[in-house]
Length: 357
Image (tube, rainbow, N blue to C red; front, side, top):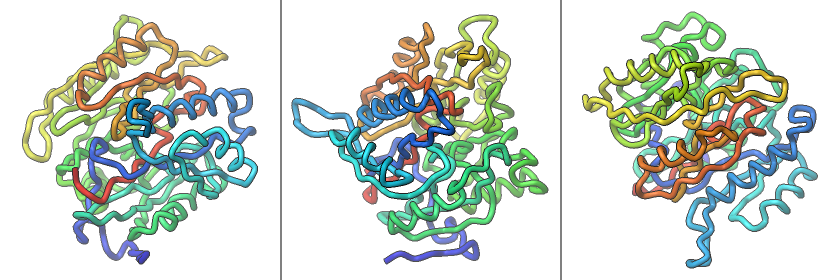
């Protein structure tokens, strides 16, 4: 039976923690690209990329005659959008939820799912449009509505945290960036020590590792899921510039250096893997976009890597695949979705399985 626990009780006190993304999922929460006023001419291309992403996650195996991946829980803002999504995704293991949302970035607006043994809970944080940049109707309510539909214990936590700003290994380590979590446009007045305490209380982690800043032109102010990803215990991937004129070369070099000096919550030195950067990816107006191969999604059977039409696309997918020997790794075009500010990890939020595998 659904139970709501307010901030008077913290998840860590109740024994909950956020599992690693590579642990088994029961489902993934997504939102159908629907808002023409936001996407404009990129709406249909973004929908097509979204469908390809869903197909990759579901992972149909013709030999087995079934999907090997995970269920898709897809939000739609209204009945018309629901009918379209249902038609477009009818060949997949999908369930449609009529829950209005501001836009598709559920990594940041959906709840973060937690686990205690075989019990799942949700953590709903406050959200302020990435530092008051994009305040869209319904983004403030979508987390609690998803939590209610999921039917798990709910924690309601009164501070701002976006899911894309943190990476965890499920063994006590959290990776994040100062540019985002210490930004005065999120939780003004809170010190680094106070933010660390809140992360430990909310996510059940014991050690927080800090990088400095993220990609140029990233409206999220340095979300970690575009600059460094934990892929297994004590193992983290970052990007490396392949040309001297890469606009983020200095950022990549600093990240790699900092990661090489870090140890995790279990006092293990981090193994750092390097993925080629996509280089400068520009929009139709010639502006630099925050393109990152690290914005991949780790599904039950498949790692889905965003590609952008860069000469480095294929090499990046191959490089990432080496770190996931138990899964297939596929690249799917995400440049139209990127016009909205992010890629595949940004639009997804995994629901962990109750059983520990």
